[in-house]
Image (cartoon, rainbow, N blue to C red; front, side, top):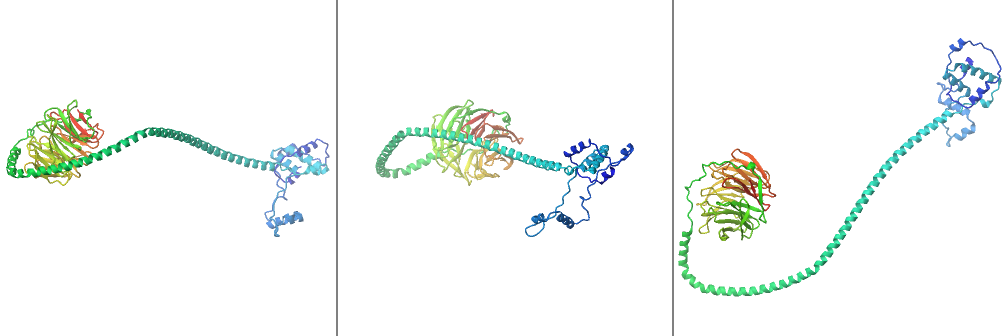
Length: 599
């Protein structure tokens, strides 16, 4: 049995139904060909090995491709070779195939693989007995069906189909996500379309309502048009009558002038002499130069601007409030506005006392006479008006300037009034004769502000030519010019001692000048907005600046530190002033048509 086992080749294992048929035949009576004595020790010590492959099926390493082609050509029928040849007469490449496994080798390999030695011996014995006796049929010695090969192919096909299924699922998931996205977009656009349709319907309804409303005005418009045509006809008739009457008046005036010509020649000499005498008698004398400043050596506590808050806002003008001034004797302030009016208010309750109307353009400046009985106003209509407060009327109008007048200021004695104008000049008016006594020429741009040095005859001007100048009232000559600003100067003011000037320009720069040494000793940068005005407190230690950013910036010029930024206006602050008697509060005028109290 061991010899037979050694002769058989080893092939891949497989199971078929024929193995059961062979097993059933072992129960039958068998013929003994040769009796061999096998001891138990030999059975246990014998080591079975798996059969090797059939030598006929193994490829010879030394064979070449030509030998294999030759063997295949001999094995195949001649007609098959003819059919498989190419149309051009060429031969098909040879194919090598492995012979399938026979059924007895399958059982042997199976029993060896599972170490079933006794079963293998019994199978070997019975198999050769039956084979030698010829009891096996040819059909029973067939090869093992290639079930595993089929199963392997089906398994690979299943794996491939599963992969395709997974891919199909991924494609389906992506398609579902895309479909959901398109559905959401469709719903969004549908909703948007509905909203647009609703808005369209609403606009159509509004348009129809407005059309009906317009149709109601058609008769009224027709009637107004008819009235306008009638009024234009009447106006033309009145113009014709006016021209006729004017021609008559001109004729009468010529006749009257001819009659008066003779009498004028006789009285001309006497009238000129009398006028010259009266003019000299009515002119006020120039102020003396030997006066002293009563505040030169006085000291006052600085204003407490750090604690100030906006307590009240006064709205009485229809336009921007450009200037504000305190009455010299009573708690009353005057404001000038772009609405062509000026007004007086009682403090601190803000009751309206007086309103002045008469300028034909914006009112730019206002000043009280030192005795408080007169008010001077300047305007964009190139006039300066003197108002009598007690009589509530305009006392005199000065038209010496050619362009808009920006500011005015009274001398501390009250005999002279100085005004600055866009015509590049500053004029000094005699309050007795109401005539211009002096004209200061030297600036090459608009003179934006003018004021007196306290208790002196010097006039301070700030101009759009970036300079600040000091003039002598008596001679009209420029005493000193301060250079240093890079843009137009909006205002320049003295402190009460008269030794320091604060000038502000359109770049937001404020410079402090020492008049005694004629030099700049401090510069304050308030930001990118213009600095419109500045004001010293009573002691000259705190400077308040009206800024174009709707705030008031306060500085301690003695300590050279920023104190506080007061915000409360809605538009640019045009002017700021301290209460003169004790710095108890501060007033500010703004372009938002109001002025405010800070306390």
